Image 1 (cartoon, helix red, strand yellow):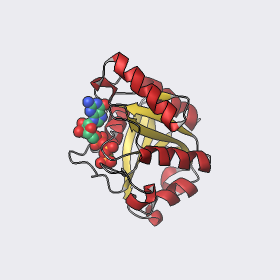
Image 2 (cartoon, rainbow, N blue to C red):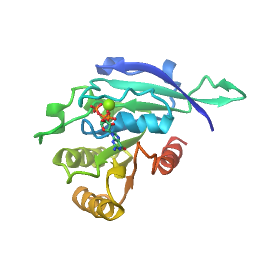
Image 3 (cartoon, rainbow, N blue to C red):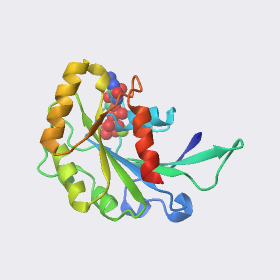
Length: 203
Ligand SMILES: Nc1nc2c(ncn2[C@@H]2O[C@H](COP(=O)(O)OP(=O)(O)OP(=O)(O)O)[C@@H](O)[C@H]2O)c(=O)[nH]1
Ligand SMILES: [Mg+2]
């Protein structure tokens, strides 16, 4: 299936979230994680394009950026998108925050709590660093809200297989999750496996 990404809008307030007239109620996938963890890069790798601008300075994504993915059938993109991607601002860069919301724009929690079409949260954790309390807070929050989520371990290309396996085990143990999918936006390792998860969640 070929998908054509179309940038919808940048939301800096809950009132900006795209209405059903724009999304046609299509299932939404949210990308969440600390600043610099690789959210925008992963979206680029998934889309095979540069739709989600990759920041050179951490903390640059200050809004929720929404993209509609339209299936192309017979050379024409369908009107109703197959799914929506939401690239969220990062939290907790280089410091331990007392709560996620203290460092996170106020519109994120309403987004997670109330967005009806949200089908899956993709939680990104960096495989190159020890488990971070801010990631633990997000995962605990998602468990409490009973939102479906999948945890993805980013920048796996930077580690040997041995170290990667060891770090993934530590992350799983610390965050109390059964599975972390290792990915690399650089080599595209794990990207296909993640796509399958997104398609299943969007069905
Ligand atoms: N080696 C390697 N570097 C990566 C990978 N993914 C991202 N990076 C680098 O990490 C930095 C941050 O990537 P972004 O995708 O902008 O991170 P982000 O999570 O969107 O950051 P914010 O928008 O600030 O929250 C960039 O310098 C990327 O090139 C990866 O899979 N492998
Ligand atoms: Mg970003």
